[in-house]
Image 1 (cartoon, rainbow, N blue to C red):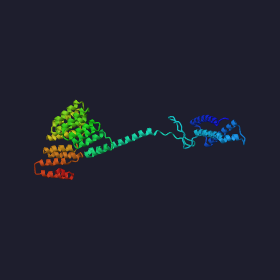
Image 2 (image 1 turned 30 degrees about the vertical axis):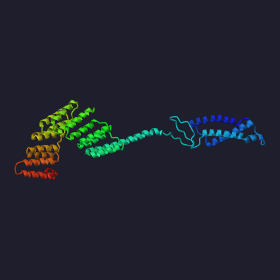
Image 3 (image 1 turned 45 degrees about the vertical axis):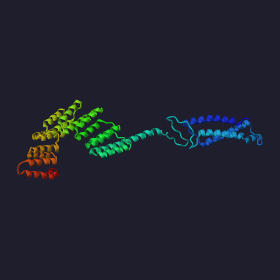
Image 4 (image 1 turned 135 degrees about the vertical axis):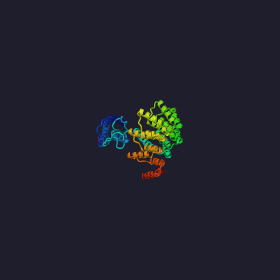
Length: 433
């Protein structure tokens, strides 16, 4: 009599053969049988095992106590139970129940995901961990750029109006909130200080800029120089240009033009001219701004010859002359009391295609008033109006001054008449003052 475990070994062999075949069919995409068919196969397997055992032992009679005793003792029951469990294991291997995923080897990269019977197949989910980080980083980076752009716009507006307190608050609040301001932000902060001619505050923010590890650029130093220039310190302006070079930065045309302008505002024509020479020695080609500043330096002193010298130099270099260029020349003539040259260069200005403005005409009218030539002053007033330019308070003041200088009893009437015109134009109060 064979022990029931012999049949268990046979069942194990059968299961080992069945399971790989089912897995191969599943991987090949073969359709799966229904659970009812699978259950019938399980029942048939159990009956087959019982039949095999019956053949081995012989089918007993109804009253055979030996066989019945063996059955009662549990031998045959154990065989049936173990065989059924073995078949059940094979069944679960082939057909995992819904909601209870069977253990399976991880699919190879690029393999399509499989689903249970009756379910629609869906593409494999992407690796959320791998792609979430870059997406999150990109979103954060975009938010930071947007916040920085918003800050720079606000700082630019504050810089244009010279609101240093507002600019400081904006920059500090941004950094306290975890933002990282860059070179542009700090340069705008410096520009706000320069607009107020506050050199000390400008220096303070430059030190903070360096302490924060923010890159200092040529624009940074140019802004510092602009603050010194507006504060009337040409020497400090020149010092910052040298510090720029010591910092390893190359001054540009704006750097030199700023120093030239700083000297020009003080009427230091020689100092301005010296820096223009240094500019040429540095192989930096001067622009119209540098020449305009130099001409302005001579105009402050009423040096017509010096102003014309650099105007002719501009023309030789084919640099563009502007209304500022000619107005500085006109101003030099007016300060020198040279009415003829003032009128000549106003005409030359128009012939060159440069449209005079109210300042240009007012300077010439002022030159005529200084020479007590009311007739010429009124003439240029009329020419200005003909070109569609409205006189301002300076224009009317110059003409009234010419009337006051004119001898004769009628001068008072003329002065009163021009004052009435100024009142009608809405600038009477300023002209009278």
